[in-house]
Length: 109
Image (spheres, rainbow, N blue to C red):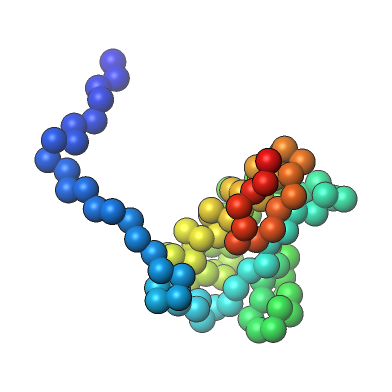
């Protein structure tokens, strides 16, 4: 039988993030994410500098891509991993629903 969680003693903390103040570069590099409609897949291009793509990890599910990125040790920061999970999930929704995807922008339905 399901038992509802007890929040009576929980501390509630408002989430906050400042794009300018809180952002920290991941020394391992960064990713350019896109939906490739011709190949019906999501692609995460790994870069170290100046948008020069060194590797492309691709798939149709966000989980497959970010799990592989972690296995390849291409991410050193938890905030970067969280960001990638969010962006890859958006790309997956765009792929499934034939929407345009632009990294760091809201999906337009």
